[in-house]
Amino acid sequence: MRRSVEVDWDAGGIETELGWALPAVYAGFSRSATGAVADVPGGPRGYQVLVAVTTEEPSSQLALAHRLGIDKTQMTYAVDALEAGGFVERRPDPADRRVRQVHPTAAGRSLLAAARVALRDVEGALMRNLTATEQIHLRRLLARVALTAGDPQPCTPDTPKDDPRP
Image (cartoon, rainbow, N blue to C red; front, top):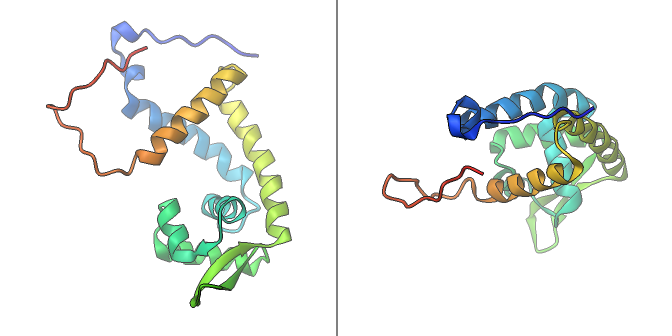
C-alpha cells in the first residue's frame, strides 16, 4: 500500500538536501540489493559487469572498468569470478588479438535474467511510495544525471543556477 510522503520544501529541512537524500536512498537500496544479487559471483560488481557485457558491444576488461567506474584490479577479480562460474568468457578481440574481450555465456545471460527479477523486486519495495509513472521518471532522471556525474565541470559560486526546488 502506498502512503503519501510529503516534503515541506519551503522549510529547507534536511530532506531537501540532495547530499542527504542520495546516500539515504543508496544505503536503503544497498542493504536489500546485495541479497538480490548474492548468486552472482562478485555480487553487485559482478552484476554490473554482466549487465554491461550482455547489453553492450564487446569490450576489453579495461574498457569495462572505465565504463563502470570500477578499479581495474577489482574488475579483474569480478571477471575472474564470473569466468570461474562459467558466466563470462574472455575471447581475443578480432581487431587486436593482444586484447581480450569479455563475453557473456548462456549461463551468464540466464543468471542475469534471474538477478534482474530479484533486483526489480527490491527496487519496487524501495520506491513503493511512488506511482509506476514516478518510478519511471525517477529512473530516467537519475540515469541522465549519472551519465554526466563524472564530468569535470566544477560548480562554483559564480555559476548561475536555477532554483532546484519543485
